[in-house]
Image (cartoon, rainbow, N blue to C red):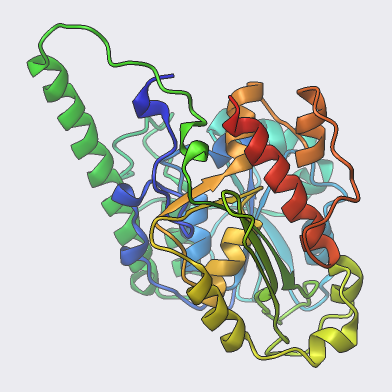
Length: 387
């Protein structure tokens, strides 16, 4: 792989390269409608996708990735909510056009995110989704998604569709138009990037190619810090929105072995399942110091030139939600593992096993589940750093 393939500085919130981050353009918009975004796995890593952007604009929304949804908890909770009917935003002969005849009751709106072909296959493969009442829209204007081809003039991106449908359901399309600001910023940045690259290729003199650099090269930096985190996570309840709270943070600096660990008491009530899931007993959580103490200690531990590594995006999401300081360079080890494996990799230990590396499942660098996850992340980082 060339130098340009190496992982770039990434925004933890939008998960885009820092130079193309659109987070400054986000506006949070409260809704009566609950939105359940079901994203096809192939869409998750598409750099110009809009489902994550929409979920960040809509506090009363959830974003899940998958193909089979019949037994999925989020879908089942939506179907069991007697106070809020569930409907699928998807065209069809029997679909109700909300721009002409919007339902009057508050809904849970299910939105399948993916290419039209993949979205259609998801609906067909899930009788639970296919059986839902369908809603459709008639866009007031053509899609602004000029960097991605839509199959027909009336087709729009996920975030554009949500602007129209939520505006119709809640009687005020203009209130939702700020959702298109980050969308336009993303498109403008992508167009400018393509233009720069095209012009650059025209002017670039012929010569030797730059030397190849492994995609794992950043892991050989002296200041790699592996991190794991746990949250106080409540199960979904109809009409109640509780964001996960950072309650446990563990890290180790690979070059020196210096370690960090802190537990913080939840600012809200302790979720019933949190002690079992995190491996921390309820009393240690409810009697722990406040989160501010954790964040102060974390700030003292970090250095400006640290490279933060984690397995998956869950730690990043918890750090972001807590307002915790994060170095400019962040690497998702699971993404690197997928590059090395040319596909899905499972858990950290499963990935290592596929590479002939045996790791003790019980190995730990801290208390609870975070301690075990940190040990496994360290093993992955060390293995990848060796090329």
